[in-house]
Length: 236
Image 1 (tube, rainbow, N blue to C red):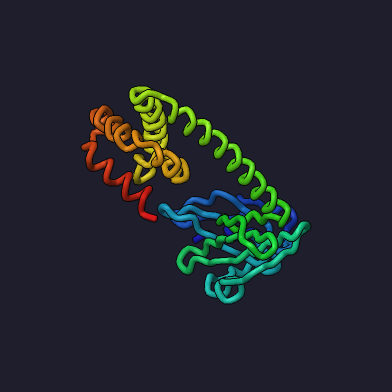
Image 2 (cartoon, helix red, strand yellow):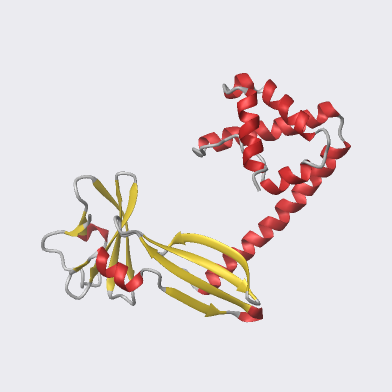
């Protein structure tokens, strides 16, 4: 884990990331001053993990993970907003790496409308969290509109055209999902869209035909992929 370099005084105003050094297997990536300038947070990559190390500015003392667990784990912060909205933020501390995550849940008139997880630091204000919710809401509305247009076009298309529509979606999403390292790149449709398309009697046959034609491209048997898709999208 990170430590202060010998001879460095982190109580100084000009404290920066160069005041710290990582262990032999770590790499420091960021420094933040938090808690009203009382503490310093060092973010460090160790192996494949993101780790947090906290230091008190007044004396350079390192704050142990156990202390953060005691004071911060399961801590909840509730903020009331306008229009019947309120935000409940809960904190989770990784016992091994010290990484702190925040889960933000937004309620409108006591009904949950949004939930997301993020790194706790840098901190976000309630209005920042609400803005993320509104952006997601607008994106959901836009996605739903695009999906409804896709469903309408699919329904009025011939069987061959339906295959081409799905094949275009499959190819672009498979490639993108592989590049992002997703474990199941065959999940190329949103569940909501898949369920809407299920009402079309040609949908399943069209998907099967797409997978048969794409076997060489994906190098996986079409029946194996079809079973994975059906299990994922029709499990609930």
